[in-house]
Structures are given as C-alpha cells and as structure tokens.
Length: 329
Image 1 (cartoon, rainbow, N blue to C red):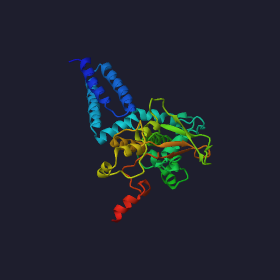
Image 2 (cartoon, helix red, strand yellow):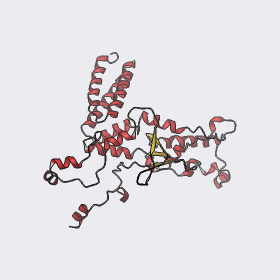
Image 3 (cartoon, one colour):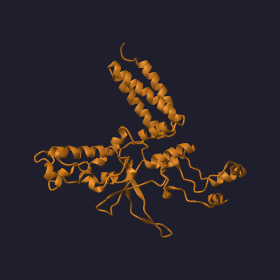
Image 4 (cartoon, rainbow, N blue to C red):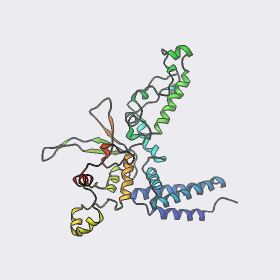
C-alpha cells in the first residue's frame, strides 16, 4: 500500500476550509487558512507511508477541534484563540524571538575561561519585565535575584559558602548547564506580548487636561495581529446593569436603538466577546517607560481584559444602586 492519494487529502482539506469559514473573526480565518495550506503541503510532500498517515490523522483532529469550537465548545475555542494569537505553538516563539536579543548589552565573562559558549545567558530589558510579573507568566513570576543567580543553582556555586567548603566547589560545566537550562525553561513559561507600546509626546486638550497617547509597534509583521483589532471585537463594556427580559420588552425599540451606540466591528455574540476578553487577560501589555533607566519596560493589563478565575475586589464590577437595592430588600 503506497502513500495516501492526493484526492483523499484534498477532500479532507475541503472539510477543513468549510469549518474555517465559520470562524467568527477575520484573523482566525486568515491564520487557520494559512496553517491548513501548510499542513496539506506537508502531508502531500511526505513519502513515508506511516508518517504521512500520522500527519493526516493529526490534520483530521484539527478539523474536529475547529468543529467543536464553532459549536460553542469552550476548551476548543480557547485553544484556537491561543494558537492564532501566539499563546502556544509556533507563533509564540516568533513573538518571543525579537525580545530575547539585547544589542546594547555587554557580553559577560565566560564561566569557563577560554570557552565563549559558557557565557551566562543575557536577559533583555523586555524579558526582565515579562519574567518578573504574573501578567505575563503561566506560573509564579520570578524574583529579580533569580535573573542573576537562578534558584536551581546550588550554594556550592559560591566558593565562599559553607557547602563549597565542606563538599568542594561546584563544577563550572555544571554551573553553565544549570544557568542555560533555567533560562530555557523559564522562557517557555512566558506569554509574549503582541506589540510594544511607546508613549508619545503629551498633548493638552481644550479643558486643560493633559493626555498621553501610545504608539504600538508590532513584534512580527502579521496581518490583523494587533490588540486594537481584539478590542474592536469586544467593543465598549456597558457601565449599567443588563436589563431583564420584561424590562427590555416594556421599553420601546426606538428608545433602545437610540441609547445604544453603533459599533460596526463589535461581535454580536456575547459568548464570543467574553472569550476574547479572557484572551486579552492572557496577553501582557508591554509599555516602554523612557523616564526609568533601571526598568525601561513595564507590564500592565488591558482595561477590557477579563480574569474569569480571579475574584479579587479590584476585579469586580462597581456596585450600582439597583443591585444594592436588590441585595437590601
């Protein structure tokens, strides 16, 4: 039995494209259309029968995952959002790669004399900010001292320590390996930003209020991969409580239409908007601070971000009079 015929692969590809057309945003459709095309090319170019069959099965699993996402499965929809916006997968490393380099940093001395590859890893200012905040990490953030002396490094690495005096100094080769392994493992736990914001000169408005705007620089040149597009899908968050069905039916349609501002890009489905708000909570907002020389980059959260598993007081909606009256009745 030879490799899978191209007609069966193209049949699967047509099923894939039918599911891609149902995705709710242009970036999702654009991303998965390109991904599907690359996957089909990889399947057709594979000569080994068992490897081609394995790739075809994985491609079919992707179709079923897209179908579950289009049917409203929470886990599947969040997975395709994470893939399309670089929370996991190949795009994540494309977003992280420009942030790993620091052209202005001076090279540290090698740990092993005469071996250039034994230099300690260099943490760029962007990575220092991302590694030390919980907004850009999948696990607990690092302390600043961990960037110079990893927490996995034994005390024997310090020649003046008690352990080094009792058991002997730590091997230089082992120290190099521990530092490199710690750097690689912690980079995997970073959630990369989609863009870097640089503050623009302040402007004075007509009422005398000083406003500061931000210019966003994309990390990778990919179409529609900007936070502004995410925020347009979410739209403005209503400040008043949602009206119950009877109250909505008693209000005239004309009054409802006149009170709600028209938002062209806002997605009509509330469930989709909530998923995008949860996605925005997994995207750190990296801001350049020219006033600070020690920490030139800061990480903040987006105003529209929603943290579904965090019930802290500062995350909760402000209590309005209608809700207070309902509680006190």
